[in-house]
Image (cartoon, rainbow, N blue to C red; front, side):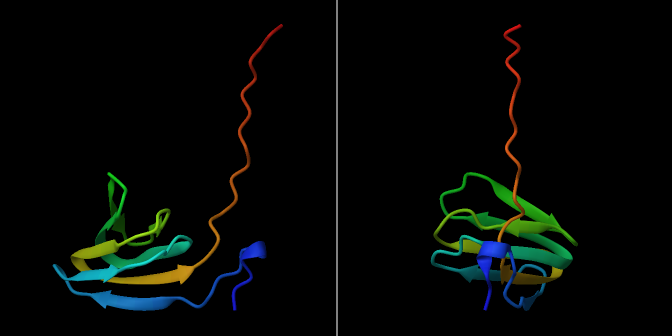
Amino acid sequence: MADLAIGLKMPATEILLPEGQVWQAEGDLRGEAFQCERGMLWITQQGDLNDYILNSGERFWVTRPGTIIIEAIKDARFSCSRVRPPRQEPVYAHLGCD
C-alpha cells in the first residue's frame, strides 16, 4: 500500500502498445503517473486543451479527473503507477521596495 504522505509509490503496471493502438482509462486518475519506457506516446486527458508527446524516459502526471487516452506513435511500452509528484518549493519574487 502506498503512503502518499511521504511520497512512496504503488507497484507500477507495464503495458505494451503496438504502433497505432490506443489505450484508454476513465475515472479520477489524478496522482497517476505514466512513464514511457520505450517508443513514443501521444497522451490527451479530458478537460485539458493540450496534448502531450512522451519519448522514452519521459513521464506524464494526470492532473484532471476524466478520460485519459494514450496512443502509440511508435511501438511502445509504458508503465503507470500512483505516486505523489515531486514537491515544488514555492517561488517568491522580491518586489524591491527599496
